[in-house]
Length: 326
Image (cartoon, rainbow, N blue to C red):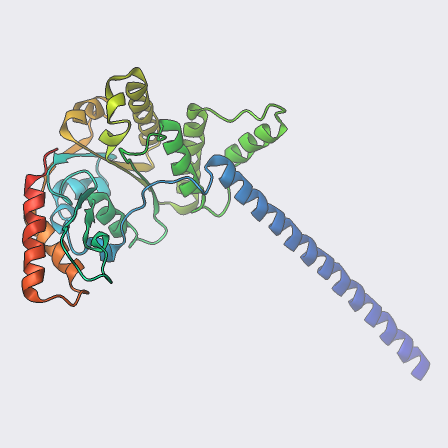
């Protein structure tokens, strides 16, 4: 009896050991597959837009203070962010943050060596305020591009690639259309990259996939459209072509029904945007000195300056903003 019982126990133990070994193998294979997918995920992101790509990022909420509240409660903004029309064009000039561009006002005088003059700069954009407000909604897709007039490398294709990478980083899985295009590239002996239209198609497919998975729309913020090739190249065919291309790509996204697009610009570019986005909401915005005062006050609070000095700084910055012409 004892011998028979021992045989049964050994047989049961072998079966359990075999099960453990099988599960261990499956778990190891799963981890390896996950690691491969994660590496491929990163490879695809780098292929779309290298992480070294330089572009302006939105200011943090503590950097913009409690400014632009008037805009966030305006009828036109609430229509856009809600169930209303999909495109909002913000056209205006003047003091930031109520203007459409990133503006820097510097106060230049002798200050303590531990405080650089750049720390006293005011750099405000309405788009940053909107970005931080949208961040308060969980699982909301937000992608952005803020044009910089001093960056001569900005093109419509690069903008679309940056937007696509931003969106994919917010998704659990890369859409099959993107993976298929990446596979085509890897198998191509000439390693030909996609063109702008293909990147636009991939962004459109990704927006649709994001909406299907999350049941939420994508918010696309494009700031300072007028600064795309906005200096000496302004009259050249290349500049006109790039602006037309970015309008085309954004219009394509608008057609998905799942994207909300906000574009800020100076007034003389507003009409071409209206033509590309018929029926868009158009908000005419201008500088608000009260916003400027609120922002400067919040930025000066951390500094141990005398009140008289703070008042002088405030006065000089407000004077500088009043002289700004767009």
